Image (cartoon, rainbow, N blue to C red; front, side, top):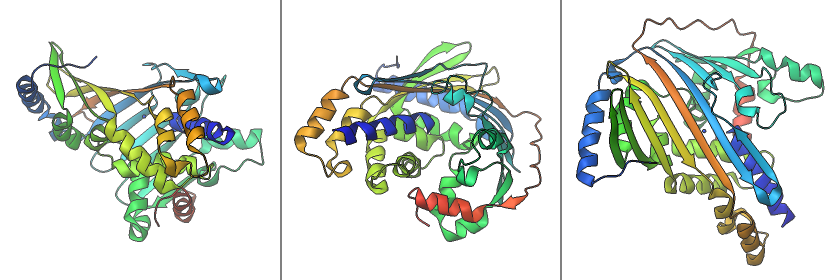
Length: 344
């Protein structure tokens, strides 16, 4: 049972480091989806936009005495992105994500630029970790300004390429077209501003945002598999099934021009901590009694993830050029992703 508890604790940490619904009749939902689709049609034409993403996470695991609460702070975005047809630029503030785990997360983050050929990372901020512990191994995220050759990665494996670029901001035109059809229930709760509230499965929400569900699930699984002796394939399958079975609450707010202004989502993943004990492939060395005891212990787990994305669409925006990279880490990232369970 200790093995199970340790693994669940690792899964809890990986989950932190990894992202009231309207009802009504089926006919009214279909009509409202049509209204939302029409309202978002102009958004699909926006070629430039800025997005700020805020996140909040509440995780309580009484069985192992673990609790972590990160409030959604609209003064501190997790990510700020600037997107144009030429390139994308992101500033990621990991301190906003880790403040629930660390007493003083401080200034922890990195920048990256993405175009059709390369990703450029600036992880200079990570020098603080090296200064604090010269023996620390940050792997492919060691301090520096480096590039990754997307063409070389894609030639080796489309899956590796998807793992690298699949987490960047969703294409706004794709989101505007796919989000309304992903909602299985929806109602309009306000006309000024226009606000729509609905539900969908977490898997359908991820796909509407441009993510490949299996790649996303493998990213979760890979983070655990790097530190725990578990099958990446089995973990990936578990997460895919979980995401397909969990509902996501979605709130869409439009601006005065009818363009997407705010997308808020809330997903309750609490069931993950009892459901893992139903999957014998994850714990082949344990008995049925041990799995049942584990399931009972984590029956009161609570894990809710919230995101709020605020968009400024169709604006005059020039995405900055990346700094000159001092090294190429394509090979290191290829090895890292393969070790995390992605096929090379």
